[in-house]
Amino acid sequence: MLLKTVVDKEPLSRLQKELGYSFSDAVLLLRCLTHVSHGRGKGKEHNETLEFLGDAVLSLAISDLLMHRFPEKSEGDLSKMRASLVNSVVLAEKAAELGLGLLLRMGKGEERSGGREKASILAGAFEAVLGGVYWDGGYQAARRVVERYFAPDIDERKLGQQDYKTRLQEISQMLFRVPPSYRLVAESGPDHEKRFATEILLGGRVLGRGEGKSKKQSEQEAARRALEELQRSGEAAGKAESEKLKAEN
Image (tube, rainbow, N blue to C red):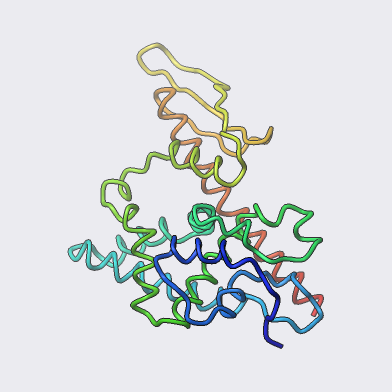
């Protein structure tokens, strides 16, 4: 059953302008923005298979861009670079930049549970849109979208020396609308060999803990671990959601 719901075209036009790509198939774009919870059990199309396609297209496009930018790098280095760029936290951030959360069509239950701000759903929506661009316009069109959104990140200095605090600050503001807070929890050792331990709190929850020879180092390490935790929790939420849907079907 094709998607036939009448929607406001203006937000979709803005989205396409932001992407730098106009869909020839308007129904396909609407499907990209339809979460599986929308119209569940009514035979309506959703974006799961487009998410699957977009995941593969994104991996190929990022690999392509990295090989052109760093032709001297080894396979291992390129793999690490790609992993730092293609994960649920980063993709959710890109989706937030596009405003996909407000455009998603989802079930009332999922919306009540904060689905529009869930990292796993936002990341999946970004992949679905990319899969839709590929399906509608081919690889080069999809590659241009990937380059548009990831070129600023494909920088050896950024990839090699992450400012984890800045990254966490940006993601926290986009996904949770609040900044993280840092708390010094321990200080040990003589003056010439001090060690500091810092915890990061987000929404009252400890998200990461780091240690270092200075407060700044301990904060960077705590931010790095907090980013890893956000990625793990996003992936875990996505897997749990997938298992729940399988059980229901």
